[in-house]
Image (cartoon, rainbow, N blue to C red; front, side, top):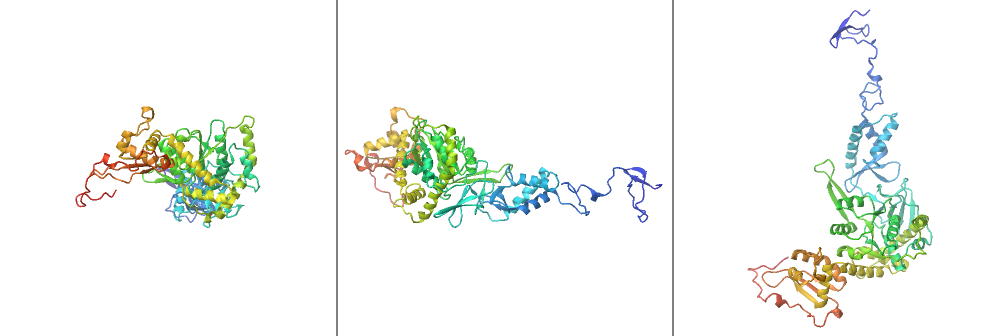
Length: 561
């Protein structure tokens, strides 16, 4: 019978000694009490919050186990835009984000449950593990991470098929092949869809042309644009499908985008602001803006920057000084009825293809057209890849006598013509001139300037004087008419490319010869055949500013503006 008394939790109770050799000065533990766990090593060793293992030592936490599982299966890299990614050691060459629905976090949560007999890692453990993995990624030098299209160091082009097995197409000069593992690192997004495996057929492009209602010149330009869309290091003009209602503009643009970069939402509506546009552009290599009727100034500038390369820096969520960088250069398409909606700088960055009205007995239902396109897609892809391989073979030797705007794309068109015998470059240059003329006609201020210079042959004066002399059409000033001299000067600079397309040059580098040194705008008609005989060959400078002797250098230093 237990006769020893000891105070436990402030109450006396009988206790039994642990054994005959137990020290008398140590309070023994009652091992006969039901429900009392005296063997700490016998606890649940699978629980993420356990403190000790079967050997009596401290057991690793759930976060430590998650990090160990991740390092066994992934390597961690940092992209050039400072984003951490994980790459499977035995798997496709895909960069997986650490967080998000398709990221490593969810995969590790499932792997943890499968490994430890259904135990679930807590959210705090997963968050701690992600923080550690981000630190591991920062230990490595940044590496390029591509979206849909990339290039190797030796100049080969790699196109991600978007399939789960990570297959890709590698295009070399004169040939292309499908490989099981991409030689460059790709990332995926929810806006991407898989491509079919391309096949080699002699009539792939002809099959695609039969689905479209455009003439041969327009189709060849569009085919060259689609092949060039897989060149990741050059700016691409915006493919603009123009035509009246019922010409199939939206379907044509959608099929073109789904050949280059398939997406569940190949056609997008006009974004509401620059930040919304940046998020869309970051998730797709090629995008199409559908049914554009008016283009606000901010969107025109944003599209121009997206063609040549753009980036947005924003504050990261839940931080004060950390930033998120969205950098991109994209392949764009849009549909419109009126090219006059294009601003001058945007009009120089478009490839305009006009669609013809579909005859009623030739019109097909959308379901029928979708089925025909799905059947022909592998062959069309093969035809475009054949064209790209030929372009890569001759492109290094292509030289142009004069370099137009979008010069890199013009070189690609010259290479296409050399490979195929087409005339895409002359047709593109002619179409670009027509687009500029249409855009100028859509700008009331630009039209008034052109009329002024056409009538006078040449004009010289300040922006304020120009604003006084230029008369709006029908006598009423439109809402976008410049309101002061500063806005008028900036507007003339923006219109300079369009004015040049109709034979009017703009020079704003001169100053008046009086002491005020006003900035001058000199508009000159460069086509002598269109200049009226009564127009003076030189502006009457004296009628605007009286002649004065030039100031001494010490009295008025020369203008260095």
